[in-house]
Amino acid sequence: MEKQSTQNTKSPSQLIDEKVEELGDWRGQMLSKVRSLIKQVDPEVVEEWKWRGTPVWYHDGMICTGETYKNAVKMTFAKGTSLEDPSHIFNSSLDGNARRAIDFHEGDELDEDALKELIRAAIALNQSSHKGSSKE
Image (cartoon, rainbow, N blue to C red; front, top):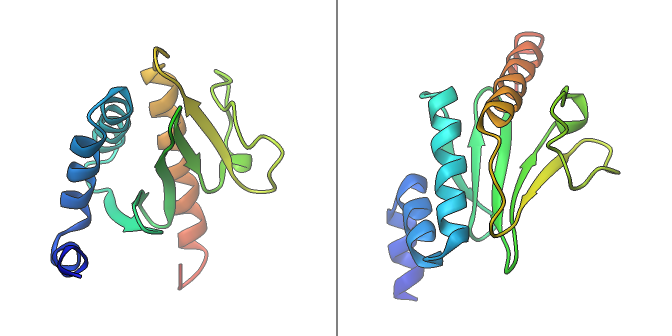
């Protein structure tokens, strides 16, 4: 019970920091790198902690999640099917109606430029959708 009440007093950013440290391996390093790239692209990004331990990044709507599994770090873009992917870095959830994801595995090289472009495109899409409605 105490752990739950402690988590409720921590910010999402603190919980994400703890997740990275708790993983303590390549997955924590990859999640940290992905998070850093998101913040480089958008210093105003809002971090949330959802679904019992999943980092989620928002700007005028959800940009993406950062899920961690035993053998992968999955970066899922909420509106991935609407994003151009000229570098073809989406490699997961390719049959979905809305989402697209990138699975990173141990030893994978991160194409930082291509990933930053996807993040920029996701934010731009959210902003264009957000302007057209009074609610998110």
